[in-house]
Image 1: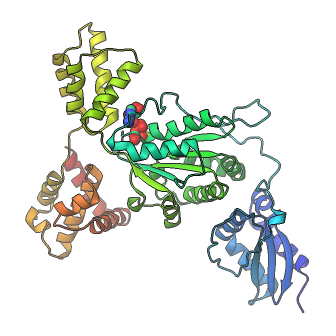
Image 2: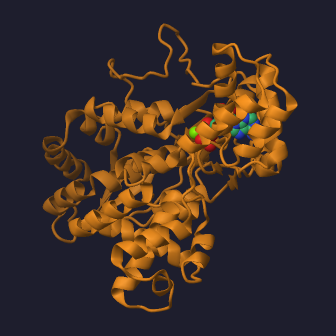
Image 3: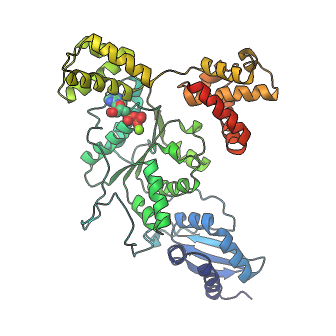
Length: 474
Ligand code: ADP
Ligand code: MG
């Protein structure tokens, strides 16, 4: 005969309580209710899918052990998940047996731990207000008005604008913006946030750099306030996460972000994510998160053409109420081509020089400044140059490196050249492949992964790679 489900669950809880922190116990096991025990299958009810996933990921070993202890080898666990009508995700197959019971009438809010821990160090919450008000961390300068439109950014900009008129309701969710450095990801993502706040003053918008998010999460783990951390993020209407590539290989942070992402997306909230690479090229990010990034729209920001660069410079001068001869503006726009941040940097240093030394802004002054500027900041490293360095280092001719041979040392030299080309040039995987023996982009991607793995696992190999890197940078 089956034992009583309540007794079995109580016995399990006793063991669990002794094995995890009180806070975790209260948070994750307090809200669980045993439902029934039939044929050695204990069914427990959890308040949401999120809860179920969290338990499966973090406590399954412990749970499995205690269940087996109580019910013997054949003992199994089944979850009954209370779902709202909006829940629309497939649930991953669990390690144990599970059945999801739809029960829309009894949806429980996610607010499990009513007592907020007092010391949750949350920099985004403005204290002293009755209703929680979130500091959105938006910079007023990064508006749509100040963002110059060009062929290089048209798709990203118009998708961003559409999102800001209708957050969570367009098919651009998440909106995934990617580009090399200094091409406007932060600016555009913030513009969306600002525009939402203008259009929908009641919506809670939050801009956060992925690095900040990581640090906050780590702090919350230290302070036992992960639950609060999560609740905070789950109440945001428009969440902007900048530079998501920073989460590479940070598995726990990716996990928590995954749960927050799911919760927000399920509830029709808007996510905007920026990255230095498109989802397919992101390394060290778990596939389940990458697949989420592909749900919405991925749009890139490319290097602006000459006209757009001129327009950006003009806009900046106009905004600051400054003047500059047309020929100087054009000269700057001609000279600095690949990065808007550097373009602005050059403009600012010319303005600074002229006002410090009380010199007029002339073409000559611009030439002097730009020469220095370009020399200091952006010596271009080319694929050819990288191949030459690798070839010298291993004493293998460049032609051999690029040949079809599959000899191990040569394949490895080729892969190292590909790896550094990805790291130090702005070329796409496809372009790198063509330069390195007419290979396709998948081969280059594979090479980058292989080299990254070897760097992590093989000390001697790492020394080679570091040596070559130093030679490339000289
Ligand atoms: P990223 O986040 O891609 O590294 P940012 O958004 O920080 O780049 O942009 C770098 C600088 O260039 C910022 O000062 C930004 O205002 C400016 N900028 C980039 N794109 C544009 C644009 N289309 N119009 C006006 N300013 C731009
Ligand atoms: Mg940025």
